[in-house]
Image (cartoon, rainbow, N blue to C red; front, side):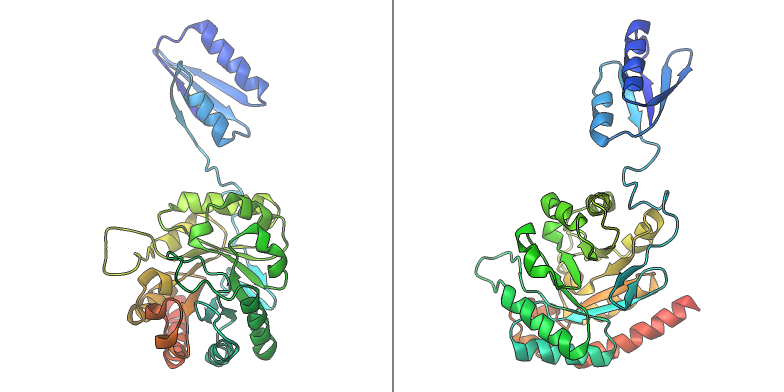
Length: 334
């Protein structure tokens, strides 16, 4: 970190600051200019300590040289991380297709979707059991019963299952879920992230509605700092002034995150667009720009879906899309 002192800072105040920094196990290299003094700090600086330095009256500016997301950043981990979910691999050239309904509604519904996405080549089955909804009157999911139905679908198809966890109190119910999803609303639920960091279980971390890539990586840092290195990032659209889609899908986030981080990055075009007709084109674009996977909402009867019906694609459309995604991937890698 580079600290520039204000012109005219008394020598005694300067030496007091340097002594304080060194007491905090920082190496301080001093560069004396004609009008200003610049301090180059080397060591482990927390963001809060950096803010305290910036607040000092003798300090004109503070500039970070390294990024604060050390564990999720590529600087100290240059090779791509490959996350394993059973026999499925994500990242490092391994592409994953996650598909299934927004929410688990019944045994018949989840089994029909699971069979269809399995036949189309999906790698994992998604389904919401606990649904954080904007309105308290919307279908909230079946809870523990929904998880049991997901496990039933896994037993029949062999597909690993993905479901959203919304509270650390739900952890005992998710012990047998293969991939735990942290939704956009929970991206900054730090108590939950800390608990997930203590697990030896893969976590799918979705970007918040209005979150920057920096904030997404800092949320990943909470999980990684707890010892859980099995984190997958998900771009699912952000809120902008545009009202033509549910959210604005930020596909530039995919290569940008790959540049910043070693973690796998997948894309959810269903929540991003909110319209079934747009899911296909955005899925193809995501595959072309280097995403490590896709998460797509699929329902055997979209019109009958109890949640997010407008963005669900039917089983035949998903099968056709999966074939096109594979073709785009082959073209992009050739």
